[in-house]
Image 1 (cartoon, rainbow, N blue to C red):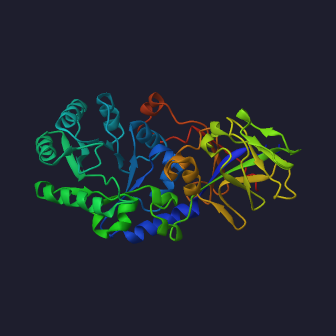
Image 2 (cartoon, one colour; image 1 turned 90 degrees about the vertical axis):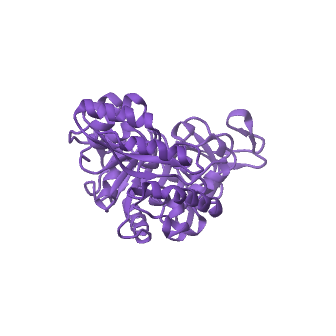
Image 3 (cartoon, one colour; image 1 turned 120 degrees about the vertical axis):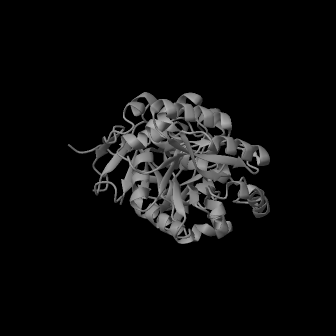
Length: 409
């Protein structure tokens, strides 16, 4: 039976992911361990396949946001790779964090006390990383207060503080502020000189190599999204986002397009309806402004992006037909649309563009060494916490995926 074609999908390039990992590794001192950040479904690229590929390529630790993501990785058979929880845990989540052998990030003695209590009841000892605030204002305490809380936490019998960390707020755009935060951390460093340390994200890693301490936390660069413009020549985008033409029409001058009639045809145009909308994560803010690639031509959106469909002007894309592939993000011929381009139009950042690609958009994995050659994996939705909790340490296949034949086979 012939497979139906995909209407809207994201292609994830394993060779680009491995290339970016190698670029990052070349920037990191040999003794520094790499925390590969795969939170938020690996920035929309697919948590389990991307995490497996990065670990196969040499990532030392996986950074996730919460215990549900940690549980999903453990349930997928990643039973030995260390996992760091980058966000604060709710009190009721410490038990699951311990069961999944994840390292919580804590900021206060109260968190440490609760975690220690859960560990004692479980008859185990747990490791955690302690965060100090140097200017991000999100997690951690400041200066002397942080040191005081850390020292109290160190005395708890079932808790090991494996590292101390902080987070730079503006490494991508403000080197002076970043250096001020670094100096603030060094001011207190003698109080935890025996501890491993990590501060650097993707941007900070290219500011100063001194920021690469015991660990570095790298996310954006791994996905080929440059935190600074000059990195575009070093990194390769991992995600391409595509859809298809579902309908073609010739409309005369004077007609309007889509909700609110925000676009008026001043001359006759050939319009194509695409199988993508904000229900798939293609932002409504791109209405009337963004472009897509059709037969290597840049074609502008006409009218408002709707939930499931978007209209574009394909007058310049001669010969296009229903079913043709359209690129929303990525390259076609000699043309390319970067996430930064869409982000600028939508008034946001590249992170939001890729993480917004919805769960109903299948991810197609190409050239992944950690997956069987030539497979296509369609991700439906992430596991719920109850299911993941029940299988934290059990090795099972990816239950939220199904394998299909490649449309280009």
